Image (cartoon, rainbow, N blue to C red; front, side):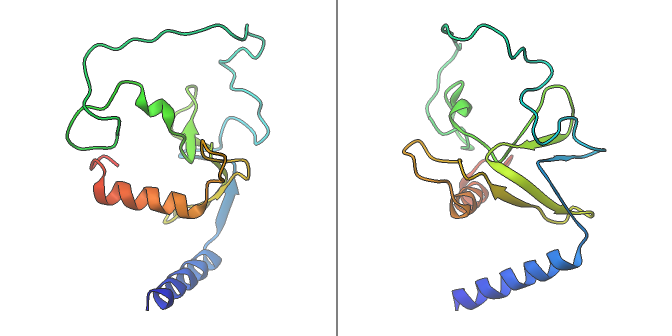
Length: 151
């Protein structure tokens, strides 16, 4: 029965997508077009010729009781969010624009009633396994069911 339900859901989604005027891009902007083209190498506020190497020391005041930054109760460790990559990421020199990070392509209709992401082929986990659409669905569902309401 679950398989029939999934087939029906996917059929409905594909029919809706086929009827809508869709946009496909490397980025999505709330207003106008993204500042950076598909093949940009670096954002303007970064010096690609800066000195490479060295070390960084970071500190944080306070404490934590969890390494999970998505929980409702408790305090997660400072900087823990640096362990995770997202489907998209913003730039610091334009508001309300998201560029694909794990996502290579973003597709959406003019009315923005849905969004579809195409994962980069080079997106992988720490152990070398490829990130899949199932991983994204699991993460989304887990955040909706068990994560902080912000998510």
